[in-house]
Length: 243
Length: 270
Image (spheres, each protein chain N blue to C red):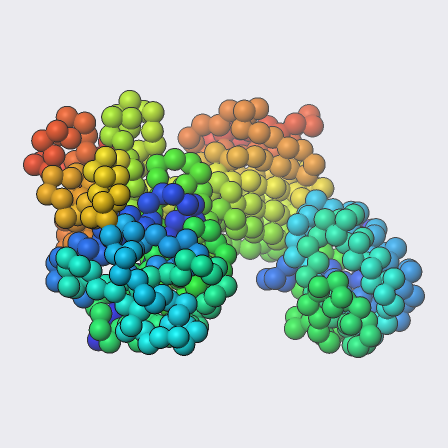
């Protein structure tokens, strides 16, 4: 992962940029490279972060690329069937390409409103920050309710409760100052060292990297607790005894 | 002064939105407010039945929206309480027959004649829900003390927060609580519900047979002197008007002597 990140900084201009926006995932294709190379690159990127993006609303910005109907269909099928993304919108400067996309019931436009085609660093940019680092965190002071999903590439800190039916997905740690009653997925891009910490840990399900734990498997108490992977399983411990 | 527009909603169906709307409306009208109830459940018209006004309907909300009648022609006055009126839903069409803008327009026009507008929201979170909340500035969440109903209520509270227009924080009515079951720990208590939803409690209505009989007769329970549920709903109406009314003591021992003793504490509330 580290290698990929370094590589991407060097050849940023020909790399696909994937970033989280408030409406979901945005995939931006660079101009220039051949379509087949880009498609392969996208495959590799999505393979790596598969579980992080599952079910995310997705927009694709093709820039100056011109695709025929078969290529659009192939892209559509790949994103939806293989990676289980919810493809909403397609942006392209080429009118014919947009027309093909419209046939697939996608929203279309010339350019994504958040699309900065210059490579400005973005806190949620996966390519540039493929590991959660200090300073890369989001702080939410609110209750996360049923049906609401917080998805962030980094650490998530919530001052409030997360209710049953809610989902917190982070590539780093998840810290809830309050009751964690929904689903929490830390290290969603594969980091097995990620932790989940809550003052009241009563989750429906905990996930760390590719490990899944149900509350039946793990006993929780009313005091602050943390969860991490030990011997390939999710382990729950009291924060008091951590040191 | 503009009137208050309150939406009664729940997410889940069958928790008692329509009965609650009818009763609160009647109770507020009895207290001197000029009240209109809007049935936003287009295609599944119920509010008029609960109030016993079904046979008076000539025009409905869809007729208003589509210009077949004036708004005033569709508004039906209650036969017992002149302060209360309803705007019925259509029984034929579906939720797509009106849109949020039209709902806002209707409410604006009704503000001239009424001090409180209460909108009975359909179950679900789709178009009907969006129509119902469009004009509202306040909301009442009705839930039963069981997990699926609380889950849906929680979802709806989240959606209200994300609705994009200014609304006061939602308030909660826990409906159909059964004190004996709560006492034996067989049912979630009010404190459990409050802890999950984290919104202000407006009232607790016990599961009461008088609600079923009064609903079937088209006579709201708030008009029945000896109904416990009716008393709870009358108290809710007073709280909506800003009065500080203590909560009914619903512990089983006191259930017989009904509203004689008021106590602020429920089992499990801290």
